[in-house]
Image (tube, rainbow, N blue to C red; front, side, top):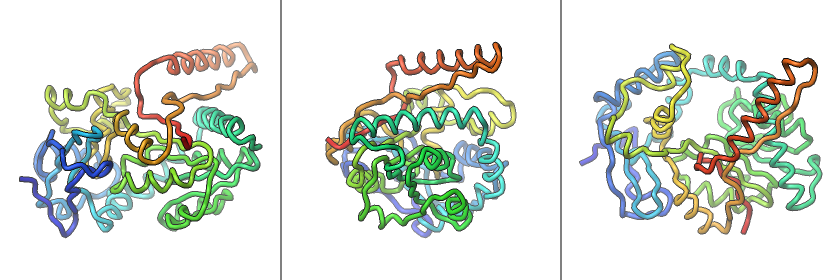
Length: 334
């Protein structure tokens, strides 16, 4: 029987997507027991401070919905613990440094190329010029995507908590709105990048964002791939893949990304194509693409730059030709 310390966690007794009770347990371990405690400890070792008293008496339990195939953590943190996770265990200063490091020319070109594709989609759907597009960045973070949407001329709205991030948004011309505001607004592009895996109520959020979408709804999440087989053969690692990458600099493997999709405390849900099928069907949406497409700038300033940028274009074309699901979905109202 799963243990849940109701002072700090609450139990999702049914599937948080389709509310089915037909679910099966695929893994269970106490949050303060090995190997889950080791995984948590290594993951936050260089980020912030872990208060283990918050986790005592609660199990990390993974369940799979027999109907919509969502894999999810049954016991989820309450608002108090979520605040501690995202503001102490992930220390703001360290996150600020990481986000600043990500503001590179290469990252700008990659994100701008993808948003260019989304803006062209909107132009085909409703004929809107970029300056007329209303863009919602659901989960602003430090604004990497919102900055580029503003540069393209869109009116950008965003959701986020914390005064520091709200100040960043105000500084780049982005209006922070509340979740309640969304229910009274409409957007040409609803943008979610690595957000839905963190949500306690993903079905409710999907419903509200779908209802607010006039053009394109983007959802990008970690994909669990062969999670059940990986757990059966290898179990849970004692060291976080992110920590290993930070220490050794090695590239993450497919198995690493599989574990990341069910990261304790943070990645509460991991989605399959059947899960997305259910969400879109129930909310009057349809999937129009499952491939992350991007335009790539060719740099003809010198031969070396031209060759490197041409190779990037080739790599992007190769990725788009792959048939596998990557957790990326573009949807429009059906």
